[in-house]
Each structure stands twice: as C-alpha cells, then as structure tokens.
Length: 255
View (spheres, rainbow, N blue to C red):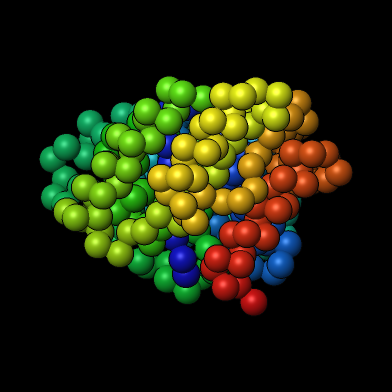
C-alpha cells in the first residue's frame, strides 16, 4: 500500500482535481484506491458527488481518535475507488491534538492498521502547513505538488520544499517528492512558459512532462460531482489528466 499526499500551501492550484483524477485512472486499471479528504473545505468529497450520511465518520473522527480509519470509508460510484470524507470540524482538529503525545504520527498509526487493504492511498491536503498537513506528510511515502503557472506560486514552492525536507529530516526519512504537476497552464501566456522553464531547470525529471491546461470543463466537473475523466472524457482537460496518469503509472512501475 503506497500512500501519497497531494500538497501545496497555496489554495486553488488543482490539488483536489489532481487527486481524484489520478485516483480514477488508477481504479480504471483495477487498482484499489482510497482518497482521504483531509481539507476542512471538503472539496474532494463534493467533487465526487458524495453527501456524507448522518452519523458517517470523517477524516476528522479518524484524526482525533473517535474511530478507526476503516470505519470512515465510503464506497463511491466508481469501482475500486473509496473515500474517507471530510467534515468542517476538521479545522478544529489542530487544537484538539495539542496535548496528544506524538501528535504528528496520528494518521500514520491509523493507516498502518489498514496495511494491504488498498494499492494506493491519496491524501488531499489543506492549503496550509498546519498539523493536519504535517500528519499527512508524516504518514506518506511520497508527495505530489500541483503548481499553478504563476509567479507567486513559484515563490511558495521554495518554502514548501523546505517544509517537506524538514519533515523528512525530523519525522519521516522515507518521504520523497513523487513529482510536480504544472497546472492552469496557458499557451497564450508567456509567463506560463517562463514558469515552466524555471521549474524544469531547477527540479529536472521530478516535473511531469504533462501540463494541465486551463479548461472550463475541469472547472465545471466538481459541480456535477464527477472527476473530469468521467464528466467529459474527450475534453482537453481530461486528456491532459489521462496523460498525467500514464506518467504517474510509469513512474510507479504499475503493472
């Protein structure tokens, strides 16, 4: 079971879209996948068209120890694709964990009990480096960083990499950078190309060759509760995520 966090300290960069579409592609090649919605805003939950039933446990309950991780799982309409939904209460989890011993390792311990249940676990992280994100990174084998093609996003990437390296040194020596995904790319915008060149120059092969374009169909898909791969398979956005998934699968050596 490989655990991958999808993280960036900046919001609106495509974390949720990247998470659910890679998960959808993996499920399509018959891999069993779990997505953990670890953002209090619950965008992954909404984007999959999931309405959390009354009394349903969430990632918040797992994090504060109210339930085991497997008790919070919801089966989505996509075969082999499960979800642990988010809840607004997750925003308060950081305060509740202050007195907990080894609070950075809570999620890691919860997921260890599920070892072997899934081929992949993808964690959709909140847009900040708080204790929730730290738990995700400490519990992960690798991290994928979606990066919006704009100048301020590039500045934030340097800080994020420092944070990832600090977590690697102090909590999780096996944590690796699985890859950087360039999102919201515009061929008509010289800045997009400049950002792409700079990121590729610095991070080399860690940057996926596939770039995700600005695409209205990608923006529409969450309102229909579907990943873009299902909502509009023929759109430029869906085709980009298919190519990204192929790269991901090749890097992972998935059979």
